[in-house]
Image (cartoon, rainbow over the protein chains, first blue to last red):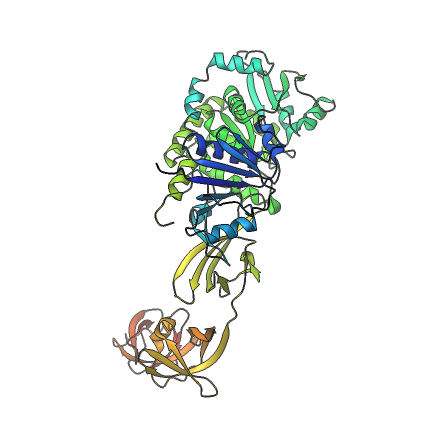
Length: 380
Length: 187
């Protein structure tokens, strides 16, 4: 019987939940869908435990959902490298681990899994080698992306069927679990997950003067203070409902990954951020607005523009203007109060477009399968 | 030591014990203030060219290279022999001659720059401008002296052909830019 290929995924948590969230999804998919032996090395289990409550932060090694989760604090002196080694988001592998890779008779497939970007240069760099300056080791750069010629996006086989089977009954059950009432006809549901510097007050002000009732669901996180300030209260807590005119803001618990997907499916509009929730929102077949990770020298603006160019390419001019104006305003370049009504007027068309966008993404294949395919290439 | 971000075209970095000259580099911001550098590298030992990508903070040892000015002396099959200012003979393999061959003629006095790594010549560089004689070209076109209309011409001694201005004739001495192989003017 052939031995299962072993994969090691390394992740250092720079900030927030995206690093751990992405790696946890990747690890689970490799193990559960592809039957691979997967170790996930994380330098901070407490972050993962917020996304996956079953994680025991005091355990250095534990097996969960067919993945061996290891706390990355050991010296790696006696660690046998895996057949495929993934360093995520340019984290630096432990020196001892790299030396152990170089000592192996057959070099493991070593992949640096990069950040997601729609910029064209990623196509030129995708799958290029990176020869180690001092050792006989070659690492390959692998870029996720939205077009052919990139690595694609994370997508589990079960995600889209689960999305389809998520009906009104499952939606009611989901809201009940969150302590919320069932959806009311004519009410617009919005989920809100963003960085601290997003113009939250502007968004809420725009919602207050909306013609339709709006309910904003906010998983408990750092932006709650800004929400509290808008309503003139201190940090709102889970379960609290804040109201102004036709706007209601509900603070819900921070959700584990599978539940967060359901939140995206249950809402009409999803404000998402970074990479992980941004990708999940695309598979949710709902209208979404991206809060991009802010970078030095405003370089995130180029990345936002690159994605908008791609995403709006097949939209009508009106829809494209509505999307670009609101997304730019949400990322600090424009007025939400002006952009919101124009965007809201395009809701029906935008929801339809979400389906078209998925059809555009599917032929690229999912990131995990593309990674496996690449790792098996004869030339590596 | 230099980081990938500090490397420039023409720098020679050591990559797994091989000196690699940077022929092209592009800097890109990836995510969360991280960056990558895409490079075209030429292995000076094997002459192979490869594309690679590095994290901007990847550290490289720089190759310890020696350079000296020499003149071409003669061909001693299969080696090309150059002479330094102290009349020492230096043998160079054909692989290192690359585009120099296009302009290599007996008795040439051009000062060439020989680059060595571990006492082995790895590249030969001609002066930016060399003067060569036209061995053959089609007759000059009457009436056009602008230099904008070009035609093919064969250099004496090498049979290498370049585009020259239409007014250039057989026997003319011309200046050629060896970086671009472009005709500059009549010498």
